[in-house]
Image 1: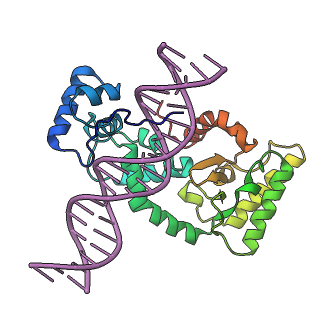
Image 2 (image 1 turned 30 degrees about the vertical axis):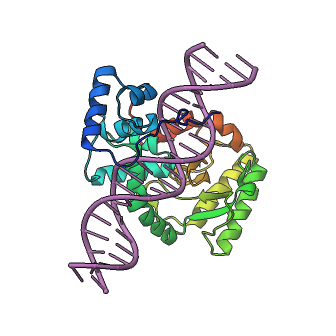
Amino acid sequence: MKKQVCTNNEEFKRGAWKPEEDLILKRYIEANGEGKWTTVSKKSGLMRSAKSCRMRWKNHLRPNIKHGQISEDEEDLIIRMHKLLGNRWSLIAGRIPGRTDNEVKNYWNTHLSKRNLNHQGQSMNSVTFNCKKRRNMVSDTNDIQQTLSIVSTKEQDESNIFNGSDERVDAQLSNPSSTTSTSSGAEEVKAVQRYADNSAAGDTAKIISEEEIYSCWLSDEPTFYVPFVPSLDYSILPFDSLDNNYEDCWTNKLRLHDLVED
DNA sequence: AAGTCAAGCAACCGCGGTGAC
DNA sequence: CGTCACCGCGGTTGCTTGACT
């Protein structure tokens, strides 16, 4: 893997873009089309790196880019999508017309993350524990039982959030829908417990209610949410195997929450 | 008026995925 | 199959601006 570097000795211009530079880039792309950013960089005469040109176009100059304040509807959508997808900004931005991933990310970091953090602190629905314990834990019911014991221990400790090592995991037993957001972490733990019990008995059909299903989520990292939902494909898998399937998994999740465009 | 601080945002950086050769 | 260039993503940095003292 080779990183994109400036191979010759030419110095690329850096810092804020000037209006005249914007104009040059816009005209060049209108004339020659999008893509081939190294060519854009060289032939436009901008003395900007390919990356810089691409970013400027994508985040500011592209047609249909919406500037200005994020509306309440957009904010609500961001919150819901983030709950489902984590920090997958491009996916989130892709469902908010005219907004870029950078803009959504910045908005989240400056406006919503703090609010979300406060909310989590109050809701007592988030349990954090070590990644090493989490990894592969959803592969079978024994692992689920192990998970439950970890979660229960945390519940007993009345310590819902603690900061571990870098390799940490959030077991977010939170509810994406506001209607049941008052359900306690203990209730959700019970729902997972019932799933584990029924799974152990070989009965995956009458596990937990739809409401409870939506309320149970696990994430491996703050940026990666895995549905802990028996009714979805790929839901109970060794974590590593999710890599091959999670796009479908997201689609299922989004469909369940009316967030699929097509 | 000047200095300080925090918030907001644009831009940059490092890395991984992918396709062409 | 390996290498390389290109592209895109997510995290981080640092500049600008406004509020406050």
